[in-house]
Every structure is written in C-alpha cells, then in structure tokens.
Length: 315
Image (cartoon, rainbow, N blue to C red; front, side, top):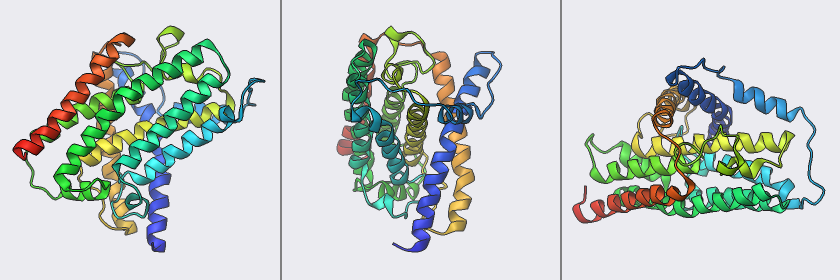
C-alpha cells in the first residue's frame, strides 16, 4: 500500500461524498423538466444538509444508543461501499480489500441498523417502515447477488476490480447474460434506493412510505447524515451499474493524472444515468406494496436467467 494509493483512495471517497448530493439534485432536475415543471436548483440537497447540520437535534426520551449511533453507522457503511466500488480506478487499496459479497453485506448492515432504529422509539409508522424496509431488502438482495454472480462468472472472480478489468478489455459485443443482468440490476436499484415504482422519495403519505417512514423520528445532524447516506447509496448503486455494464474510462492504476482524467468520464456517465432514472420514474406509476414481491421476483428471475445463459451457453 503506497502513499499514492492511499491518496488516490481518499480522493475517490471525497469525490463520492461530494458528488452524491449533486446526483440527487440532478435527478430531481431532470424529473421536473420531464414533468413540465420548473426544475429546482442543483444544489438544493447540499442546502438541505447544511440547514439540518445547523439545527439542534431532538431525540425521544426512550431512545436507546442504537437510535443515536445508527446515522453514523449508515453513513460510515456507505462511505466504505464508496471506497470498495471501483468508480474512478481499479487498483486502489480498498477496492481489493473486499469482494462483491462483502459489498452487499455493507448494504445489508445499513438496512438492519435503519430498521432497528426505526423500531427503537416504538412509534407505529416507524415500525411499519422498518417491516417494509426489511421486506424489500429480503427480496432485493438475492437478486443483486445473482447479478454480481453473473458478472463474476464472466471474469472468474467476485473481486470488483477483476470484474471491471475483465469486462473493460472484452471485445465490444452484446452478451445476453449481461443484458438480462442489466435489466435485473435496474429493477433492484430502483427498489433499493426507494424510487418509483417501488417507493416514492417525495411522498408525504405515511401509509405509503417505506424508506421515509423509518426517518420520521430523526432531526438535525442525525437526519442530515441519513439523507447524505441515502444520496451516497444512490451514487454507489449508480457506480456499480456503470462498473458492470459501462466499464470504460475507469483508470487502471493509482496515478493521479489517470484518476483526474477518469473523473470527467464518471461525471458524464452519472449525468446520463441520472437522466435515465428520471425518465423511468416519470413514465412509471408507483406500485402497491403488495405488488413489490412480483416486481422484485421478476428481477430475481431475470438475474438467474442471465446466470444460466452464461453457464449453459457461455454468452
């Protein structure tokens, strides 16, 4: 582990923390434009986070230490995931420290703490949101693992840098296994990031909330950290999708110049991905909670089909 590698790793984490709220703002802008509305400023998520950090936190009297520590655990887990996902380079120290299975474990860790904190105070809506959050995660995580296993079959490894290097150096062609996996990953990403059609991040109706219902008791710096972590989760999922299905423009070494050259490519791909996400949300309608198993079950079947296509047909 060289000094250049450590600095490059810190640069990737800093870029993720800085760009995550901007990505959320960009998606909100694109969605507003597609709906014929006046788009909000790009930096609104930053302003919201800064405003929340300036307020005093109000914590319920019966809250346990789990409620207080959850925002820091969730934010830390998303930062660790940002360090693992090869968004700017593949030869960084943390990128080789964990594989795709450990990455899914980090997402699961954040979800478990969020659900425990939502039930900790004992409010009805918090418990409702916690049950729904775990329900969605129970269905989405196996599908995500199948997508990652499909990519690992192509590269022969569950290491994300190895997967990215293998896919980036393959000849340009349409692979049916990756096509099925790409559709499945898109569906899982929508569910995991509380986007339409599974959830609506802009809803204010408690009975239809999933992710937002788990945050009703948080305020000030705690809420700011969770909102920032949610933006980081969207950023991480976007980078995972780009690394698996558009693995071009990612630096292969720890050179500062190579990483700086990869940054504009990452921004351009995130901008395109954010526009596609806004388009999907605009043309979709929110599903009833009882239809979520069908949606995520379809994603799981598509991911398994992609893996079987690779195993049986080799394509």
